[in-house]
Length: 337
Ligand SMILES: [Zn+2]
Image (cartoon, rainbow, N blue to C red):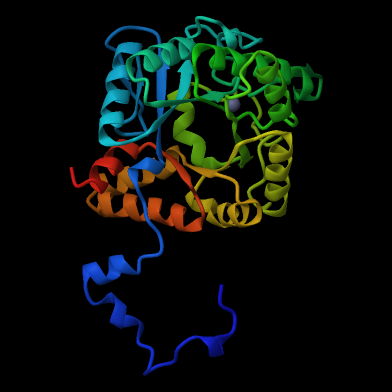
């Protein structure tokens, strides 16, 4: 970027407004583009038929049975959204997260269905244990007299099995979101051993312990039954540590990295993209969606304009890929449909 003020024009020879005169002129010099090709739609799947269970604080987002999931994914695909990100809600939870890596688990079934019916839609799977654990934490819990600990290395074994079971079902990309140390390397090693060396890893590399996840926990039924996630997710004030987290995941074999949440963490996103230059994703999380929806429902903001401006801001900050609950709407708006 320019640093030398003498190298840029001065008023009145330089008048920035000259290039803002008309829409076509503004488009000509526009620095940042937003397109449907960069959007990913998160979807929640559970067992049942013709089921669309509304989520309280996430208007327009549902827990879907497989048949309804296919309808929702088809609509997104037809609108120009290239990828979906799957989360599963199992019928039963236990202390080993068995549903996460069951060959016929709900996500594994959903992947098979989507890859069969919509082969050109990219299917990304969220790899975590919290939806499948009876306690709602992202790893194995060891209870002690003074409280509970989330065990790191023993949890890796379950995460690795989960990732491989997703790849085996046909997932195009696996996306570990647990924030255990060393999980990208462990997943990469077993994927390679099992013949999935072509399956990319999108790591939730800098995932912050955030109050913006509130509505999601109802959607994924993954609220921790005790404690919180601050012993594994990042502290909101830490930017240098976020860069170290991203560096670690890249060294361990991540093909793409993610910063989560999005709008409140654009500085992190900018630094990650500038520092590493890797394909970088961000996740506009549930409360970001809920706040726009709530204000729009009150007539306080223009939903379409605020949504598109927010997504453009994420692009400007460095996001190549944006995971957003508004993906289908935004894709339609961008194409003028
Ligand atoms: Zn989790």
